[in-house]
Amino acid sequence: MSVWLKSAVFYEIYPNSFMDSDGDGYGDFKGITSRLDHIKSLGANAIWLNPHYRSPFMDGGYDISDYFKVSERFGTEADFDEFINTAHAKGIKVILDLVPGHTSEQNPDFLRSAENTRNDMYDRFIWTNGEWDFPQGYRAVAGRHNRKGNYIVNFFSTQPALNYGFNEVTDPSWQMSYKSESALKTREWLKSVMRFWLDRGADGFRVDMADSLVKNDGDRDEKPATSEIWRDIRKMLDEEYPDAVIVSEWSSPQSIRAGFHADFMLDHHGNPYNLLVRAEECGKHSYFDKNGGGDAAAIADGFTKWYDAVKNNGYIALISCNHDTPRLAPYYTEDQLKLIYTTLFTLPGVPFVYYGDEIGMKYVKDMPSVECGFARTGTRTPMQWNTDKNAGFSSADTTFLPADVDKRINVAAQEKDKKSLLNFLRGFFQFRRSRKEFTDTDLEFLYAKGSEPLVYRRGGLTVAVNPLAVKQTAPVALRPKAKAVFAVGKEAKPSKDGIVVPPMSLTVFE
Ligand code: GLC
Image (cartoon, rainbow, N blue to C red; front, side, top):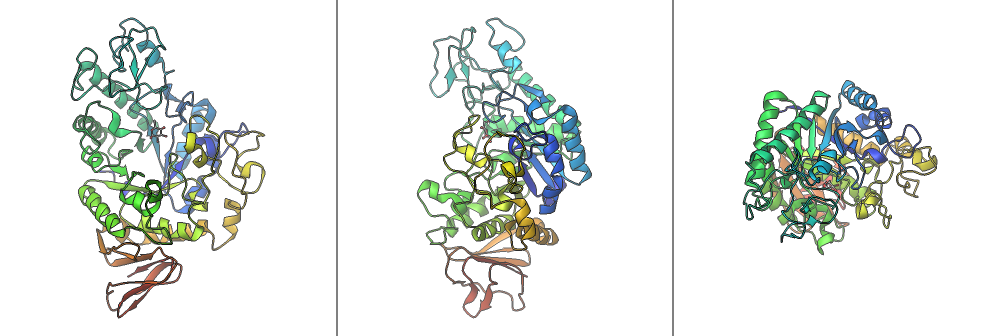
């Protein structure tokens, strides 16, 4: 098991939007390389890079037309290598995005598969038998190619599903078993993609829609055949690339059983992450709603179950946000963001900070969709470095997306302000690094009820957080000599009735 993951703090970079070095309006590898010190200064020691491959960008690069080439948009092959090598020289690992489930409709393998003749790619994708077949429960695209059949898509219509086969074959006229020779060939092709980038220096992958490979494979918490494939791939990694890690977009303890090293707890309705910060989406109150209505008991219960199911074999990956999810600002204030980040990252898991969240960049509402980002577009605006043109992201007149008009939030300004979110987070990650309890010890919730203070223990450390705008007391007795070693807002104090936690604060006691 890769040892570095345990103490990793990741920074997610959407390459279009991070730093444009050549003034063409798109971010690029050279731009990222030039800003590695910023990432390092935050206390991050790993990067997750969103897709960097050749792509027509019909889904932000998650539609790959060449898995073995970088997108010219982001620079040359040499620029990519320089980025990886410089990151490594600075002690920063880099994981790439792996998109195993579907290609671009412009991928030559797919175009070959779409020819109306049996060839080496005929079964690489999933096609129905006839051009008038629209099997129920699948999304089939018709009338775009001369092959007699319709192709099944994994996500958008531009993203044909690769054929890893079916677990339950309900119609053998067009479905193949996941053990069929064609399905096994797709799996071997995927391994060749992974080997190619690992040989090139990548430290692993964030795996897109990892649970989507085999069709008719049960629900997200089961997926036996898909899991079998990933266990096979994990075996390959353990034998050939023992330091490489795979982090899944799966959001279920099943991911770790399938051999992933870590799995994102995504914003799915009712899970602990959703209940902490995003429950409004399903008509509830988040725990961090300062006016109350949260459900700490459900959070503690859900988190404990998930954590207990994975803790001996892998990690939960906890995110400030990602490229698919609205940023937490402006829904929360900067003071609340400090509380939220410290809560997330003192729970057991691998922290992931989405670029710009370290300065509180906002979700830009009502942004017209670009490259099929739709509502996600407002989360992908250029990184705000300073108050120059395009917030210092680019010298171009037109950029991939316009920078947020609110120029106050930027790195340069926060560098100078000791109390800024950026400097706060640097201090927090330094503290987190200094305490092995956060990476080496179990979790125990000591108090979790409604919107009352949430109190949990990591080894000899106790964390007490109060999300409300009023002081609250948690009926928890601290050890007699407990002292505060880190606080957000005013420090909590032990009393005869329990821990008195000031409004909107978090304290770590030793
Ligand atoms: C994942 C990605 C998302 C993409 C989709 C299809 O959910 O995070 O951005 O659109 O998969 O690849």
